[in-house]
Image (cartoon, rainbow, N blue to C red; front, side, top):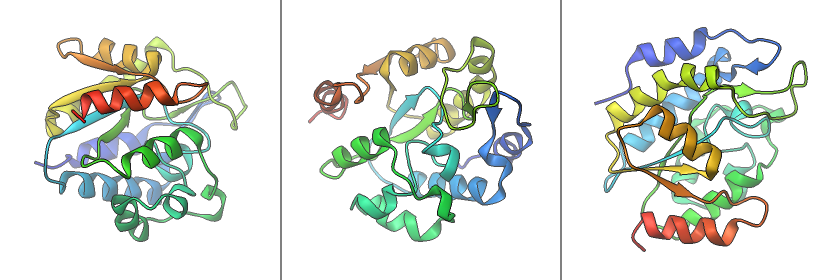
Length: 205
């Protein structure tokens, strides 16, 4: 199976507002996402899905790919990133680092499984008129994102779904109430060791 075209067209239609930025209105970021999904669906082995809360202003907002940054493809020598990077369009403004993405992918260098990354709300929520800052998505925004999360789960058919951080986990639980969502500690604010422990548990390392 593959992601239906309606998934992408619905992403692209979502209008920007004073408090939400939609990166997928930029056609090259939507194309980046398509290439990411194509690469993920081509991987063999167990399927793990890691769900965060929402895109950040230094990461997915700029690249279109969840849990990534422009710098990630230069700085982290993961085979998946090295294969995907040349297929992407990244403008000069996107070439910044995002800490969570860097920690997650550096951990994955030594692991046999690459999780599929997504967010409960796929657009960048920010304080009113303040683009370069993040905020938590509202209940209504998480409800809006449920369509995309449910559709991805239906197509990808993950063996394991895990939430990153309390917020990401609770968002995933709210949308995927029938599934057992594993909790993974967010690596920021001193959580790196617990993040590694949690990831090792779900990957059975």
